[in-house]
Amino acid sequence: MSKKPAAAAAFLNAMKRGGTAAPVAPSEPAQTPKQTSKTREGLKHIGGYLDVDTVERVAILRARLRMDNSQLIKHAIDALFERESAARKFGDR
Image (cartoon, helix red, strand yellow):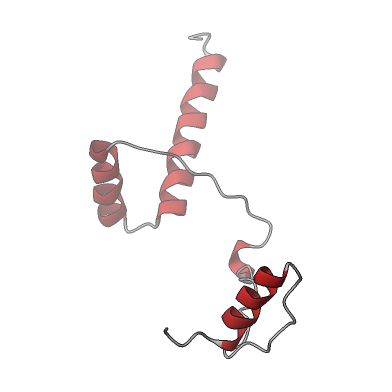
């Protein structure tokens, strides 16, 4: 039989008895939840699933324009919004 960490052994013994395991101090410190970066404070995440060709185009644009994904998405949305606003002003839509 292989050696089990103390926490695992206590848990398995409690399961056999039908009780609950007594807490055992972990050998590693518990990880704290990830803190949101100050630069992301007040921002919302938008994501999507894209095909391989679109992902390649995004990578090319990122490199050419020297932008990260967030900057590139904002730039694209701003351009699309301006185009749509202009079309409405001129009655094209």
